[in-house]
Structures are given as structure tokens and as C-alpha cells.
Length: 158
Image (cartoon, rainbow, N blue to C red; front, top):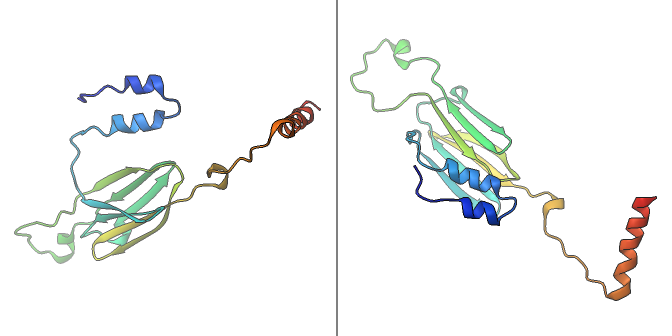
């Protein structure tokens, strides 16, 4: 149960619905911390998620990026004991199935994924489209700005 109320923000903001829904989802839900992971900023618009997946092979991992969600799954296909017919006296290396879900910001895309030394690295980049980048608007004086608007309105009416 959360102890803060977001209602005042809903009343005084426009277009931040997704942000508030992410805050609602961020409350602890008792999920396990397996597998551990790091999120790093590697550049101005570049990020890297590193997930500790020791014991998993490349064929046992899957990465799915859909809309603003990145899902990393690991599923063991066969028990190691079946191959070697050995009796395990102590199992300290976890090899259980997992699913990690990350919410991505707008315009963040997956560029690359690699598996090395038991770490799965997922490289992300935020690529803002030209239409969404800030642009300078020239300021015209007096009568010079009015005809441009009227011309546009006349063309739209025609």
C-alpha cells in the first residue's frame, strides 16, 4: 500500500498519465531480485542493462522489445544432471526460470545485445525523431507575421 496521493498532480498536469501510471507500478510487489542487474548510462543518450545470467546459454535466453517494454526471459531447457548423471551435493548456482521486465522511455530502442562472462548486456539508445526535437521559431514583427498566417488559412479553405 502506498502512502502518497497522486490526485493533485492529475488535476494540475496534462499529458503525464504514463508517468503517473509508472509511479503506481513502482510500488514494491514482493517480486524476487533474481537475477541481479545493473543499469548504466554510457553516453548522453545511451544506456546499458547488464543482467547476471550465469549458467544460462545463448539459446536459453530471449529478449523482446515491444512498444515501451523490454522483457528478458531465461528458461533452462534441460537439467545439467541429466547429461552427466552426477549427484549434486550442493546447488549454489541458481538456474531457475526468470522474467525481467523494464519500462522504456519514449524513443528508446534496443541497439545490441551480447552475452559475455555470464553477463547479458543490452545496449539501448534514445533516438528522438527530428519532428520531436526542439526547434527555434523566428519572431516576425507586426504586419510581416500576419500574411503568413492568412496565406495558410486561405490555402486550407481552398
